[in-house]
Length: 213
Image: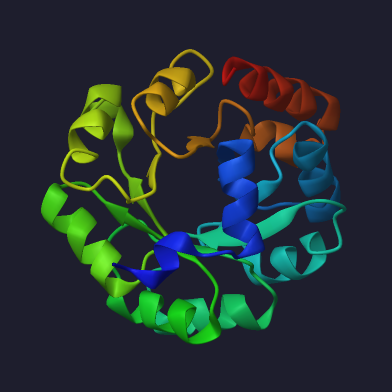
């Protein structure tokens, strides 16, 4: 069995406890600390910035100062990206697909990697590479029932849906066996990030968290 599936890392503990993480997809993040603190204060402590954001490494380094937030980075596709993210203090890595070289960096530094997958074959491959959890993407095209089906042959794998998850369907994914769900632009709209609309983001985050119960 993959030893990282029972990882005691703080990042995975937070994700499992909150049953959610937030992915921030914005062209730029003017105030990473305020954004991370807003999300954490609303109950979404695990915050994933992505390599599609300009200056993401600088944003990670700054956001690490945010109280209660656990900062990771997503859309990691290369060894160099993974190593650079670790160097600036990313607490977890997320890939959009199977990326063995990213998994190698994560395992070597003993931080969790949440690896993107779609099919049962890819889920098994992600586990064998050392994934602490497997992100099923895009979840919108599969639906909650797919997670229940996957847990038949893979009962010990931590599955996280991403893509198309919102306050209306998040609870269904959890009921189907997902260990956590991903909050995206419904919670963190790029225009709200650009405009420093922390109250709006905080309200959306709190509604998302409430929908999980």
